[in-house]
Structure formats: C-alpha cells, structure tokens
Length: 256
Image 1 (cartoon, rainbow, N blue to C red):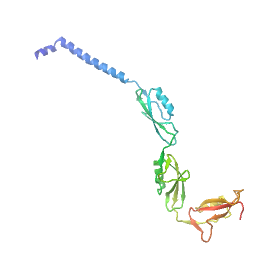
Image 2: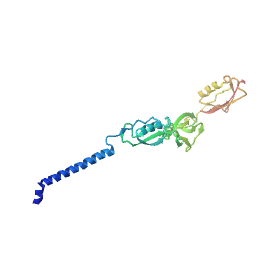
Image 3: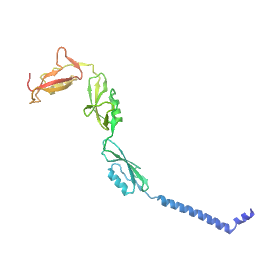
Image 4: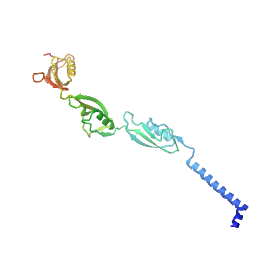
C-alpha cells in the first residue's frame, strides 16, 4: 500500500494521468464534432408554404430545395381539383435536407356515398343527417299531409331516391315535406274562363296547385288563352278538396 502511495507522488504517474485525461478529452471532442458533421447540426431549411398551390407548383418547390414528398388525396367540395389542401410539416417548420413532406391534394372525382334514411325525419334532423353524409339540402316544397315539416320524399336530379342508393358526394337533395294540414279541405274554385296566370293566383290563395296542362288546338296567344275545362270539376258533389290538390286544366284560345 505504501509503494502505491509513493507511486502516486511520482512524476511518471502525473504524466500518465495527464495523458489519459488528454486522451479522453480528445475522444470526446472527436465524437462531438463528428456527430455535428454527421447530423449537419445547425444546417437545414424552412418548409415553404404549399397550401393553395397546384401539385406541380408544390412539387417544383420541394425538388428545388432537395426535399422529398409523398401525396395523399381528399375530396373537398367547392375547391378546385389538384390544389394542395394540407401539408405536414407546416410552412416555416425547420427541417433537415432530404426530409419527406406529406402533401394532401383535392381530388377531382367526388367519392360516392349511400343515401341515408331520412324518411319521416324532421327537416332539422334531415338536414343534419345530409350534412354528415356530405350531401347538400336543396329546395323544399310542401304537400298535404298530417305531419308538419316531416320528410315525405327525397329527389335528386328530378328522380325519387331511396335509402341506400349511391350518389356522388356533394349532391343537392330536394325534399318534399308535409304541411301539417293534410286533413283540411278548402273550397274548389271555378277556373273556367280564367287565364293561366289568373288561375295560378286563384289556386295559390286556396292553397291548391296547377296540375297537368293540356291544350285545345294550337295556342296562338298564350297570354290570352283561357281555361275551358278543369278537373276536378266544381259540382254539387265536389265543392271541396284537400289542401295541395293539383287541378288539371285545359287551355284554349277559343272562349266557350
């Protein structure tokens, strides 16, 4: 033990200890600077703003900066196709060279969706369901029914649609709703001798509608053509009809 203590006091030990310390420091410095060089510490670039650009514009920017990219797609209504809608990382994020940037573009083809069950739903419920399926509420019209503001029928492009039928996302759906007065009856007006505009005005006031229009001979003056027959006819047995009943008429330029 005494010899070891004496050795610790010698110049040889001090030289060896100093050499060991210098070696460790040298190794650490080499490792530190090697790591900085390997990772290019302090070197990089900011990700450019790519949202709103076309795909070709975005790709050109990324390639000029030496960045890689991957592309995904999504359908966004009311936005032009081929436009970058999202990016990851976000613009002005500091990244290393050769980093992969993930782009999301708006596809031109709307995906299909199955039409949901909205029959007998209230207008508010139906609108919420349509929006959740990325469909749009179009026109709403009413017809006689005991239920008020309840969906009776749904139409797309003039065609009746049923639950489960496939439609493009973003389709506009027109609804027929009940007016809540299906059992009420109104007086049936006599339209004979009236022009079409006069008849429409009369029927609107009675909460009825124009049905099928037929013509008796050529109509040379549509503004002055008058109704010569109607169905249902006003008679002792038919003086009232249900609200919303369509009235079929025949127009002629020959007054009876």
